[in-house]
Image 1 (spheres, rainbow, N blue to C red):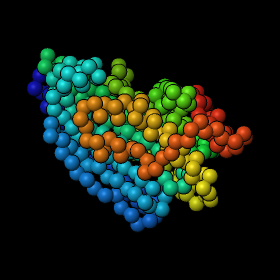
Image 2 (image 1 turned 135 degrees about the vertical axis):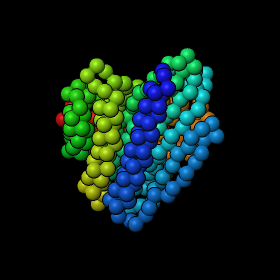
Image 3 (image 1 turned 30 degrees about the vertical axis):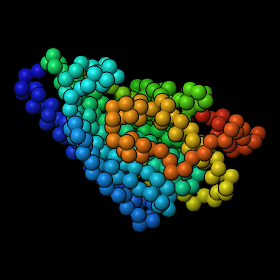
Image 4 (image 1 turned 90 degrees about the vertical axis):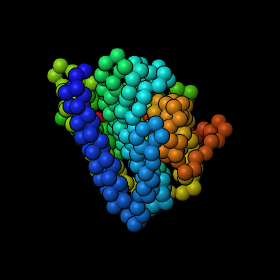
Amino acid sequence: MNMQEKNRDTAFHQIVVEKFQNIQSSICSALELADGSGQKFSKDEWQRPEGGGGLTRVFSQGDVIEKGGVNFSKVYGEVTSLMAEKLHMTEGNFLATGVSIVLHPQNPFVPIIHMNIRYFESQGNDGSFTYWFGGGIDLTPHYVDKEDAQYFHNSLRKVCDLYHPNFYPKYKKWADDYFFIKHRNETRGIGGVFFDRVQESENFSKENLFDFVLDLGESFAPIYTHLMHKNKDKTYNDKHKQWQYLRRGRYVEFNLVYDAGTKFGLETNGRIESILMSLPPQAQWTYDFKPEANSPEEKTLQMLKKGIDWV
């Protein structure tokens, strides 16, 4: 890579960082308004000793959101041997930036939601340069509502279809396969879209990819605030809360056992508070729990499968 190319990519990732920071800010504002409690996201700026840092924004005990986080990070430095092994790359220097979100609601009829958008680039000691985008949005209802599931997937499909007709079916399947709790033989929720290590192609430029990632990130607030408003006032009882705690337990299992970002962060001495921000405030495990036949809980379990066509 010559110096001109290096400077061009530096300018590009600076734009990515600025846009990601704007998305974090706009999502926090939209969620504060939709929650309606007057609560605000706290701000925790942090620095990474090896290079970079981020802004972790946390919300708790609102009227709708019990606990949630909207994180921004930009980290850079040397590619360690562990990173080279895990990410299948050459040793050198890297930069990674992204926004990650997890929200756990008060009402069991409001779903858990997760989003991540990220950009990664590295300069190898051998002169090589590589980059990729990743991200996605997925929904984890405590009770699967088909109308909500259709709304959620149709919203994601509309964003994907603006860029390529294969994006939604491809990334929907990727989400089904990724957000799967193997030891339970069930999906974490109803999926969504997920992609990783995506680069430009012959007919799809780096800038096109970035526009897609931005549009996906900007779709988060209108999608989730719609689901908040639709479900936040539904009546629930202790049975519903106990089921919510069990489903949160499944969420914890996936994040600690399978989630690649969580495992990588723990293995590379990442910032623990930001990594574990995704965990719920309260969860529960009951030995060999089996829901009542034909109950809403049993019907939800029956829909936690790969390959359901929600659109």
